[in-house]
Image 1 (cartoon, one colour):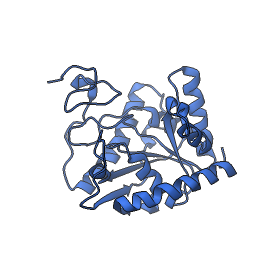
Image 2 (cartoon, one colour):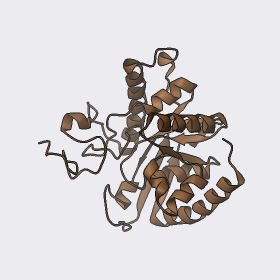
Image 3 (cartoon, one colour):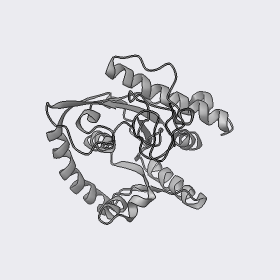
Image 4 (cartoon, rainbow, N blue to C red):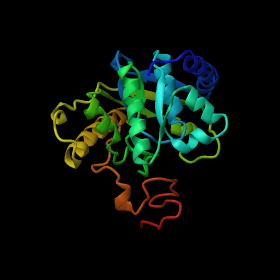
Length: 255
């Protein structure tokens, strides 16, 4: 799936709007840009605030890589936003088997043409009370192992201070700094050629999450939790907003 004139033009317009806004909202410090592969790859970032996609997209676009996200299919039905998502060749994620297969096919086509696919392994904003990466889903690992696609871990920190998780307004002062660190591709060679069963996909996913968490620990200069937060063990839903520690909308208090 090569970038069309329409997708390039639409991305240019979106970037012309978004980049100045992000630059005005916060300082930026980007490291590890040399680790961005020349060919197609999967970017696997942590996820702690709703503006994360803008931060990651900003980094990739500034390094001549058009960002392609897996987005909820419902977003494609929103007026204006849906048109922009389709025009920039973002990938709708649907729950049906046929829809999931189509999403996978589109992602593979983008990577085959040297594109960048951004997949949040956590699947949603982290539920960890201290915003450490939580237990990951296996989609990124499956795509990587099926296609022999490199997975590049990305950690960022600081944007959550500008727009905290589930916030209703921005906090621009005092001025914050968004730090992004791009790591070397995750070594998944131990899983290559193995059956794509639960054990293989879980092991590969853990390797990806370990790499992302390690980068974030370096940015924060802190030790991450010994065990990754698992929503299922906290009586939390896998999707939807949470309301404080151990709660989700419509879910019981985990404590």
